[in-house]
Structure formats: C-alpha cells, structure tokens
Image (tube, rainbow, N blue to C red; front, side, top):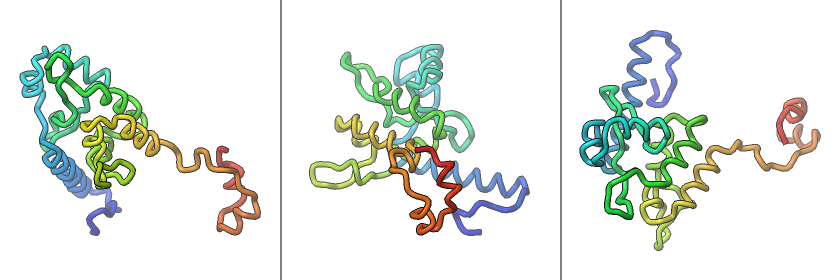
Length: 180
C-alpha cells in the first residue's frame, strides 16, 4: 500500500493501522510545535479548575487533539501570556477553532496551523506556520489563511459559458449546477 493510499479493504485491522499512522503524524507535528499537555498538565500549567477548562474546550477556546493513546492533549503552542502575566489560550484560537469546526477536524486544523505557508512570511521572506505568524503578531494573516482554506474553490469565481466549460472538458450541466 502506498503511504497515503486509502485501503480498499473493509478489514478492521487495516483501518486501525491507517488510524494509528494518522495519530503518529499528528503526534510528530505536536512535538515539532513544542509539545502538548495532558488535561492534568494543562490544569496545572494554566492554574484553572477542571470546570473552567472543560468550558474553554466546549466554547472552542482551546484546541484539543486525540493523542496516541486516544486521550485528549492540548498543543502548548496555542497558549500565550495574557496582559496579566497568566498563561492562557491565545485569543485568536477561539476564532480559528470556531470557524474551522464545521469543516475541519481538530487534527486537520492543527495540521494547517503547523505547516509553513507561503502567504505568511517573516521579514526575510521565509514561510511561517500560522502558529508562528500568530506568535509574531500576524493574527489577521493566519485568520485570512484559514478563511481561504475554508472557502470553496468556486467561491467568487466568475461564471463561465457552456462553450468554455466544454473546452475545459466539463459537462455543461455540471456548470449549471455550480453555485455562482
């Protein structure tokens, strides 16, 4: 099987293998971004009670990922010092999690947040990850990137004629169904 190929088998062990590989990829990205806390570690580091932290998670203020052992973990990179010197979820995380939740899994969102993006660059022109852009103060750039990813590839595209659709190899009835 090719590393990214979807198995054709309905064999449960095959799917478990694919899921395990996916969890390993996420775990590697978490480590590369600075690690993650278990719920207990997050409670201790943030100095909040369990009820408050659960409320933060339910409100989308923190990004929770399923770890290798299937327990929830919290990437450290999403936290920052508040104006009062307390470690808290970065304010932009809530907007990102809430915007993405209907379209991306937490793991997909985290993958986006940890991948260098050509539209987010440092002063030397090197691509930054959205988490790095957020940490450097470019919250708007990270949000624009997320909005761009979440937007249908057809959104804002000018309508094309049936003749042009045929030239491009599309069935004109397919074009007629596309939202404009």
